[in-house]
Image (cartoon, rainbow, N blue to C red; front, side, top):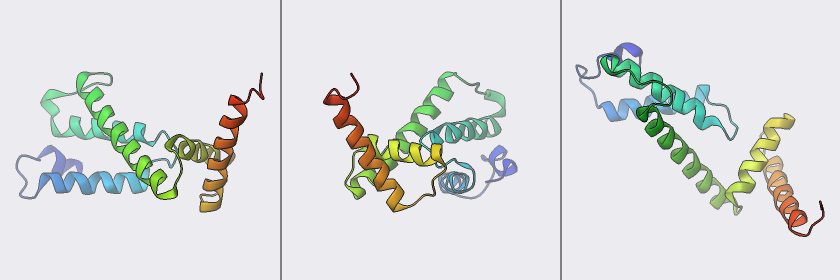
Length: 134
């Protein structure tokens, strides 16, 4: 949705919920980093949208409204990660580790690099529990 549509949300003749879903889908596709902290960008956009929609009731960072939006963004992000991890047969923390490694090392996003990173996470945890780093 455009800022003009958002600011006039109470006067437009469309399904607001559907418009916001499409807005955040497009935002996620075009603006969100593919790393494990993408929910921060989603929260920032949610706060921006709130402030455009409710110009008379501005919310600031770290306000109660911002905290709610942050919680929703994190919850949605982790839910998506959980579904992907389940589909791949890996743990969420291993998937997040693998994505972080690919981002940090500049590796291309591929199933091979993702599964290699998950295996490295499992091996690291195993080595840690075995006292290999003591």
